[in-house]
Amino acid sequence: MVEAAILSTTAHGVVLGILAATTIVAAIVTGRVFRPATNGLDLQIPRSLAALRAAVGSTDEERRRNRNNIYADFGFLASYTALFVAAGSLLARQGPEWATVLGVAAIVTGILTGILDVLEDLTILEELRPGADLARLYSRVRGFSIPKWMLAALTDLLLASFFAFVWCALLAIPAVAASAVSARMV
Image (cartoon, rainbow, N blue to C red; front, top):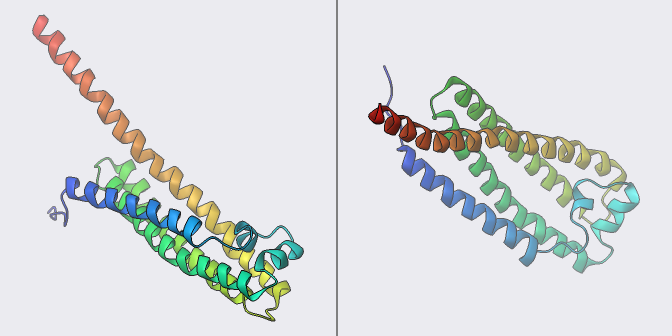
């Protein structure tokens, strides 16, 4: 027995497009409107304890700007996690078994990416407290950030297969048309 889908494939695509637009807007707002005081990547993946100390900021104003950037990042990470889930589920419903497996894998890695990003952001907020033990937090933030970036890259790779599937389907249309035309000629 086949269950009916909650959304049609077209509606699913529209939801995916809306989520993609929301994610782009969230990225722009997070990066442009709520800019960190220093290099934001040094808060996530500091190269050294000294780099982390410099990234945290030495003034209350720098710490406030960094905190606002992290608060905005929660909106961005919710948006991209929803985008990963929507894209993975659309890929999973494309039909072939490989698409289902890749889609489900993209959903799982996308959700794990979002969870690690939340843990990373919470650690960064702890780093931004006056008197925080940065030596202890240095390893913890890297422990969340590095796997997060690896899972995000894996999720992107899994979802890239969706575009390969779509392009194969789009390329198949002219091939089928050419076959039909040549069949009529014979």
